[in-house]
Length: 152
Image (cartoon, rainbow, N blue to C red):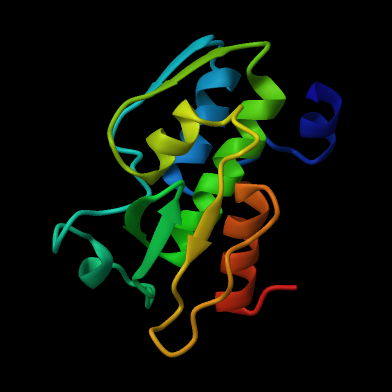
């Protein structure tokens, strides 16, 4: 890393990873040497009209997401954040301690991350509701994001 930084004339190290503040903070904490990460305010969902969707610069689509019978109101971007968290958690849980606080979608998934029976479905609209998914919840969440934003 030091050689690359010297060759490219970079004075500051680069922290890779994380497409959202929550997941980037996890990589930043690990890079700084922290081994206990406590996530607060990382709900990836909202209740009622308590949301920052209307204050976001990006156009967001609010969608109900059902996980094992519990409904959360989320966005495609937040669903992708939950999937990204899952990948980071699975990859690093043996190296660091991660605790997610709260009662939103991401904390719920965190508490049930090892449950193979966890199912996730969503409603894209009342006229066009996809059938219940028969695959792991995280594939459903990532598929939801991919389908709604057109990523391939």
